[in-house]
Image (cartoon, rainbow, N blue to C red; front, side, top):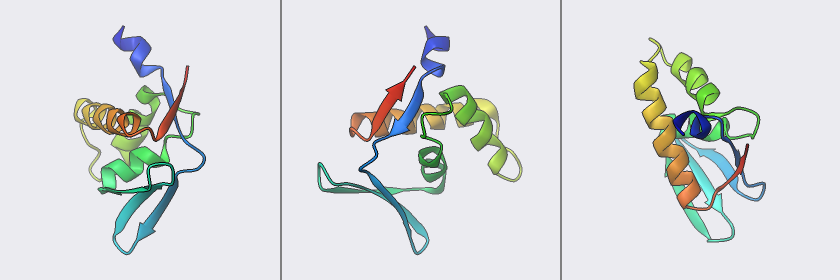
Length: 96
């Protein structure tokens, strides 16, 4: 079951806006009229939600962005939590 969950290819909804404002990253959902503030890790994860990479691939990429590279298990936990929040807020479409 866990392997199937890692194969999901999250994709951001086309109408959701993602912008950097000064040192902060935000997502604006025009449907809910809500603004979501993201930390750097969540912003990196959001940028990977193109529908082209699965959660496992997103984890591998995000883990290598930091210097020094972060432990994969910690990054996987962050990726899964961020994607779960994005999904709960209705910001994603999933592709299998």
